[in-house]
Image (cartoon, rainbow, N blue to C red; front, side):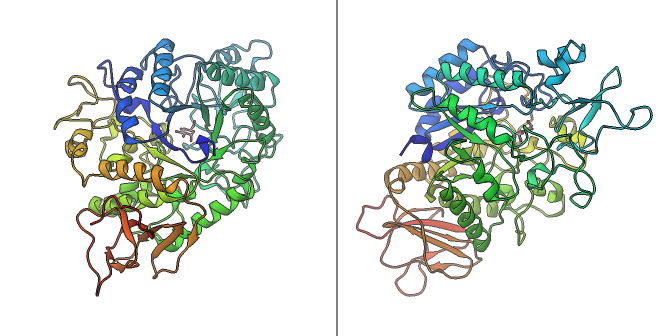
Length: 556
Ligand code: GLC
């Protein structure tokens, strides 16, 4: 098996991981200094959110130069040193490529604004509708809210599916295709092991940029995160681009790999990105949209595994990332009966008090579920510390363009992007080397969740992740196919060879099979006894069992 078929990848949101130079913003120096922490955690690879020069209209997803490093984060030389140090520590490095749009500060867009010959053809410029052209060319809405079109000084309009500062590229243009293959080689030549592809399903638009059928969505909302059909998303033409990219990756040894961010209608559509001559992996987002309910989780897992198996790709499990509410908070309230939109929690959070202790119990259990599954798994920084969404950020601190563009209806994604607490009892909790205002403020109680506070506590979140990652490596990687076991209602149970994973999403304890040893449990403290001899698995917890006489790591 190749590493990318079973890897655990840690997502580094570089702006909020660790600050080396003391300006309150994370950077490459901070990340490099913390590599021992990541190696010790036991992950196989890192995915780094965009680190390129950017005006930061969308936290770096507005790229001004794809072959440079954002000065706030460091230099290209530091990036190369970091790559060498990561590889030395046994970690692969995946970068984030943003091909759907550039920054408005990119040289191509500057040329387009200046109306240099041919420059506008690399983007989607169109005349407006109406007698004076004052209406946008079509009714598409931006993912962040408001029209997907902005007007330039001479009256033309350009398309931006995200912020106005993120003009969409025209992927029918041969220069666009050639340029991104050059960018891939630029980083592959420097030893980068792969790319996460931002908005991988958005590059090609339906010819003529038609309005969608009126019955599809009366508001013209691309609703990217809900996977709704729309002429801007998941067009068949996108696959030829990825066949070309796969060929570029195949020029290298070891082969470089891709992971798609593609919010599409269903897993059959997703699997099309994973055909053998296309991308290697794609995030399985249904897992992070599923409520804490055994039946929903099982349906999501079955569907994802079947679709991935159909094209010979590993399923890729993700519980949170920099775009969605943190797992602890998502599980801290009553659970809906169905899959939700990825921004669902942000729109209702004020209505129901969050019970973070409950959320933490469930998040610990779900971590054991995630890490026992076949395929690859992504951990978003801070997930291993059990951090909750910072919902109480002051409005003036919020930076996500979603907040403004949604007319303040959606508070946006800043709450999952707050700088990590490393040590100490007051902000910046070791994130920066000395007291400084971090780019987003950290909550007053985060000292209790810092790395230093958890490091030596065997019952901490961090200890659970460390133990789970070590145990996964030792036991689960070679464990074989997943088979569901009979289990009580609201309980998930499966075996893979001699190993079993039991997850109790009900509100009462359930008995575990008496012949098994406990390898690892998500509970703090001892597992209780059910009636008679058998061990009980408490509500909202999970356990790894071993059927054979293997030595158990943490029997309670
Ligand atoms: C992806 C990124 C998100 C960004 C958007 C536009 O969804 O994950 O953070 O805002 O693309 O680039």
